[in-house]
Length: 626
Image 1 (tube, rainbow, N blue to C red):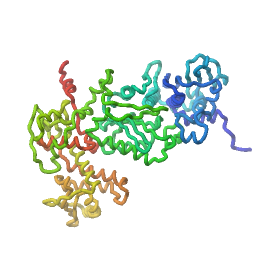
Image 2 (cartoon, rainbow, N blue to C red):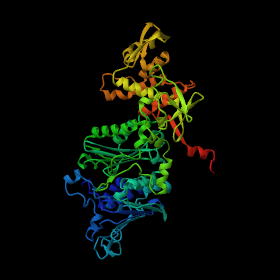
Image 3 (cartoon, one colour):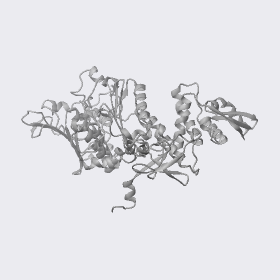
């Protein structure tokens, strides 16, 4: 007697449901994707008891005929692919033809649909009857899923609280609404409307898409985000990335869409995280809303049961493209705000079947809508940079790059350098001019918007770090002999290790030698670090090389991370130390250097280097006008 037997179709579907339907949100995902594929312009989702009692999805798409209704519940039956070529270039959200069959095996499902021009719709509930029945219904389809997991009680034991399960549905629907701005979405739970978003017409996208983002993610995200619009080699990336200072404790605001599909991919996440490496605090998560579009044949969407992951034909090219474009956007630092929310070229946004261009004009947020107007008022430190970009020649040079030959005088309460004409003084630079150095830590500066507060050490550390990276990459770590070489004691074992790393020290701009069994001498430093404490720098550099040795024989990309970690540590020693009071010219020079330095709005450890308090903020603090 054979021990191998064919599984019953119902059991096959229940096994498939175990992969496709993990929780109520999984059902919502499958049904909404079907509605999108049906050409819907509006999709309504009604939820009861976090989806365990009822999930109802209505759309105004093309609808199903009476002949198609029974096939909709058949396993592996679909209208979306016919051949392997179709599968390799699939552009629809769904394509496997198993979602409804799987859902119907673990819940009570009813589908009602009507095509355009049909006198009435048809209804089918496979658990009650296999014969469709006439029903009144507008054009489109309604799918009702009741009593989820009613016949598989063991699965219900793995469900979380209603609050948690609904939060998953809510987050999913927000992602759909952001991925497909040309569609209208509404979500209702327990007869309470959670959100209702009308479709965005192509000609209104420049103003309405930002409003949709603000409605779903909050005003603060948009106020602290900068625009991305890049294309290369058949890849197009568009969307918004939040400034590092906006980083969050969780990944709840990490939204990535590939050809309109909601994707959580390790390769993509790694590329984005790497782009933030120099500016993000290690315990925080970046926030972004990004859409990648490419040839469907260049991405395999058939690698995960729930289609949550994809595989790229040229994964390295995609990863490098994402890293390069995001790294470039973040590198703009202080100057990023000039184009963060406006002035960018048209950008293809979302994964709609016929993507339209999203034109964000410079005044995209300055329309008649009160909420839109609030964006312009609340733009905070991002908007201040649009005020001016005075010529670099008019600014003071850095106090860390050579002797200073300048003075300063005041005009209307603002410090400005000698050599700047009176008529140019009105063009106040983005970070303004310094007025005080508070407790040797914070620089207080006045700009056109109000008060700028700068962490002097953090800012100087970022400037020094960027200079060290540039010098090292160009092999221009110019050495300067110390007038008085510095020697210090170490253990004999440490001295041996110092000698082993002598060449690495030399490459990094520190010349040392072993002058005794337990004595090390530093005789020269990189010119950029000439004011650093030579002993402290050497010891710190030695500790860094021991913790993360640099494989000098590896390709440059493999060396980048450990080298940058070492240069970051070195920058700390070459920067302005806390409690050292800077003169006003030195403070102004530091502000000008920040405006010229990439990623200057974050220190090497991901903390902000400056903050803006507008006059409105200050008036609010002191209740002026109230």
